[in-house]
Image 1: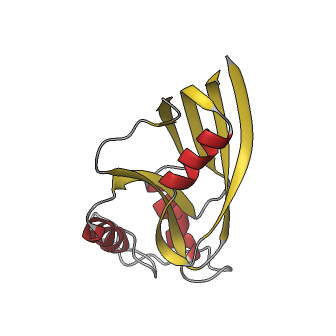
Image 2: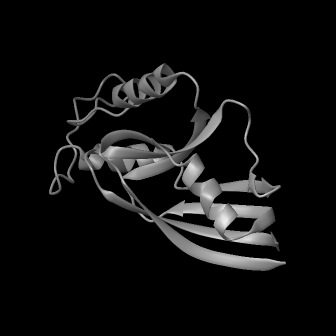
Length: 151
């Protein structure tokens, strides 16, 4: 049983999903991990990680549209229906920054996945995605920590 700890960097082009499944499986292959557990953690507060469908791109479009409706860009109206619109206090980094932090809080910043036969165990239609919540592209660093059997 061994541990491997490293970092991968991804360049996002804008808000949306980047399928990182092949990159993760390549990392597993290069590190000769036969079987084990992989923890992936984003080192940022305005993007997240998710496992979702990798067959129909409309799923990702619908998820993005839903999240935009759930987390308005310029403040929010409390769900009690009685209060007035509340504006975000944090705005120094642009109008998309505070909503990006909320979206990250509502999703995941880390995933734990099983590895078998040198690759991630995923369902037929599943992919691992880095979900960029900011409008501009960014360099995003992911921490990968694997524990398992090395070939």
